[in-house]
Image (cartoon, rainbow, N blue to C red; front, side, top):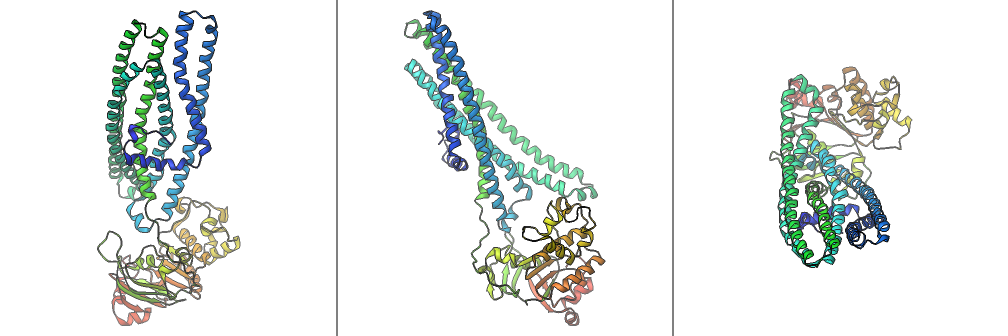
Length: 587
């Protein structure tokens, strides 16, 4: 759709830009309006030079009285038409770009929601935030300005060159000699700006990451007096961004005046030859002035085309980062089965390594978790407890062995259906900056208020919710900042209770509760265990001793299995953990 420029002469750059332009294709009517406005603008440029010719030849030399009024009116009319064209093209192109950016951001956010857990491990939160904010914004100019400038100024140059050829073929051919040299300068500048712009994307991601950690970890920073350390980290990342930004600016600042200087040399040569032709009566005074004016008018679009190279290169560097994310593989969901789930889970000789690690998380692991029973998982940190949960929810694919859910290989069950059958509460509670009601019924609008209240009562959260002025409509703040740790935990438990899934996973879910709150939760847990499979990762004895079975895991292997009493009698690994203190954080 757009003519090629030196900035897009590289095939990979051109293909990348065409892919980016694919986001504006749905808006054909608005594109057509914009293109029409650009054609109008391009026509007005040589028209102004042509009127100048008539002013000199007709009005000044021939003293044509009709031209005294007509030509100034025509000049005003041309400027009015050009102004309307500029307004229409600017507004319509910006509308197209903003619509495209909206689509890009939606695609990126949707992709992020469906990335495998392994892909999240490749990026920090700050880097992902930088991609969807800074990188997308860099492409905005490439979508709103670059193609407009490329088309408009290319059309202007074509129109002016056509008019100049009409006036004098020889002068125009002489002027075009410098074209290849200008193209070479712009091409070299493009390579340098693309390299530095890529570095800027990485610098911005690192700086955003430092900023995110500095804001999230502000309590730890203060308590450890690490303000200066964090300031140095942030300054280092910001300084690198500054250096690469200045490199782009220096290349850009040198590129434009160099192009204009070479163009001025061509202009000086043309003026000399034109004066000679005029002295031999081969050009009228009006034609001479009109030609020089038309040639001078080429400088502005030529400068804009040179400067737009900066925007294109920044946009292409950002587009590479964006499309790298959009091209990332999503979670595989080859399963189609949607069986009735009772909750019997069986691990058969499962081995698993996390991506980019050599230490196995599970080694030939086998365990049977009976339906409607409670199984507690204990073991030192890194033993593999959380890995079992990750595999049940299919956060990661496993390499060897089988995991069966009610006799079905877990990978044959539809992924979304599988997760709909699992309630999950983690030690690290995640609440969203919304109401308590929305957090308990998270992701579901079909629950009525009474169901939400019942879930809150089951989690013993209703006792504090009803005391709040806005009740269920109370805003919890960022990640529940307006609530205490125990209150946040009980909201998360109420969310899982409301889901009423046949499988309930509690990953140290009572760690933030005081003894009184935990006792209340334990009562609700006893009721839940009657009709569901419960998997508990906990380090409090009170949440372990009543489990139907306790699996002791060490270095990715099952070393003991039994209930609390039998394991203590066995005087093995569980007894040693018990003697060390199950409440310590090594479990």
